[in-house]
Image (tube, rainbow over all chains, first blue to last red; front, side):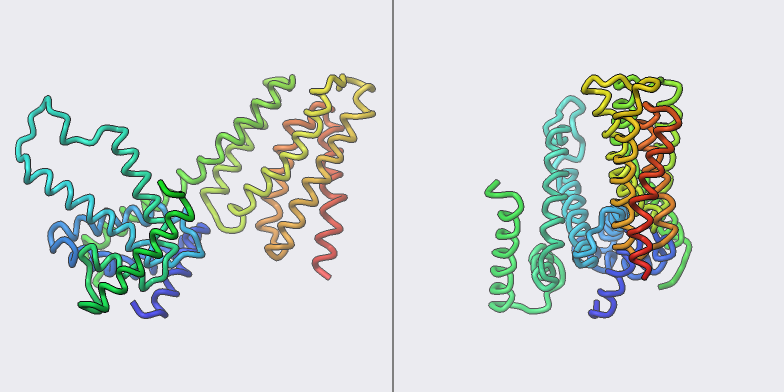
Length: 176
Length: 180
């Protein structure tokens, strides 16, 4: 997305966070194609569409918590990334055990595991939102998204982006 | 973007998710309002007085916070400012002063006025920071008045009037000065 669109989305999300419903439709119009394109590239057309819808609903559901200081697109893509990874994990589990035994709870996350996963997801999204847009794009690309550059340049960028992510994580959460 | 039927359906679901998210966010204020009401009840406020005021305060806080914009932004400042007006007379009552009849006048009533003055100053400062906007000021004052009333009814109607006088006395000069 060009910087003008990014800034517009940021302004629209800030208005939605404030409760301005007139910003909903333009924000939807900007977000949906980008989330769908991202998720389809990551997971393919069928699963990508599902993940993009889940991510879109989650983004709007959490619009009241949006931090104006953060880049809205990076924040939304962070949510989409987690949605994609969750869906892919679910699909992999289903492929591994097509018919799950009814009294075998090992494949299902316990409520505690689900709560931990949820906390980690929120924490990682929060950290992603504080990084520079290029770092977010690089991390997302490493997770299967589109790559603007290849080879050694990409590896170097990824190394730096992950270092900044780790630094931000430690600054917020310590060495957990 | 083509607005075909699935997209419209998705837009409707996204809008519902947004509204539910706002409601969830507004519900975070619930514990504070309940706490204020319980504090008033624990300090001996009659249930027939504390519950209606607490109920009105809860409805106002949830409604305005859900609606958002300037009235929504006024909720937390209103609660904080009203908290001062709530705590002052309750503190006086807690330390053992009998707030009843003429004995009330030396401490409880001044406590209400001081609490109201703190509330007025806090709201006026926040309103000035936002650019004095009636859509912010009126809800903030209403919420502060209701929160303060939970405590200031300890001195009867005079306590509430004293608190409101304190709000006006402290808040108005700040707002007038900001307009100049």
